[in-house]
Length: 205
Length: 205
Image: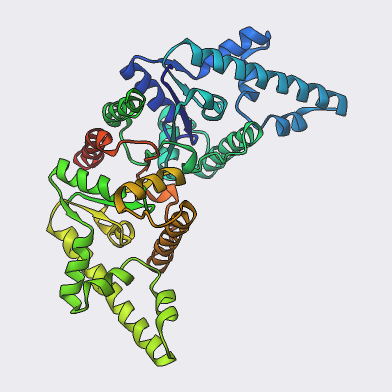
């Protein structure tokens, strides 16, 4: 069976960086925004549209933007279809080879593939600092940025609630939870990759 | 500053084994039941008595065993004294040198020493299996053993609630949370030791 690592992460905690570096270190394929491209190809929708709904609580999103009930129904249907397509794509990815997948509820969608599920989190000060460094959100005040971080995580919770009854971020649902507050991510990749190799090693016995 | 690792753990999750092996690997001092001995020496109480109250919600314990109000008050006072002595001993340990401390709320009591706090947990099946292997609780049914595991963890929660407002087992309060379900502990020690060395390395920058 292929070795699959799923990375769930709080916004601003460095989960994407960990995923990318781990994949490079382990020689695994890496999927994050790549999933958006695959979804766009499969559905014929624009990447921007998919970005907006691929990892959010999609129904509240439809409710917010629909201008009539029929439009709401249509959007709801479209989004449900999108989620089903996304699940298919994730399973195709899992069949293809060893990989690291960031977000999109891959921890739950791919559970029959026995992935190693990692959750990345950090304290709010550290997340603000990381956002400022990476995303150049200079125009936002700390309070606004904190609000944005909370909102994005809330959308992830909503999305997770649609695909699973399991609580997003609850440690019981992950094999390893890493607090990146004040951590230099590049320094933890090598031991983390060793840990993962040992984790998957258990299947060999 | 000395490097201090605190290990909080669910009963049966292998936290003690991880602590012991990590200390050996890193060349750090190891404290678990050693704290009981130190407390016994410091207070003149028996090790058995101390074992009973050193990591439990001590007030409910006093309430259960006291035969009169004056006896309850006396036990309560004794136990409060014991906790204060335990805190002093933990701080002496932290001053002494690099160490791994298992349990006893060291994560909170020693926070001014910037410890690395690790939480060890596992699913119930795995904990039952580990208990059976290590503790030879053969006389208990699975249901009774599950009950025992829950009760011991509840006592740890009670103890933690007395010394801190921080929630025991909530991932935000730890730097790393490790799910040991189905894991062979000896295999993860080496990468974990590397991770810890990198974690403390951040102070050098």
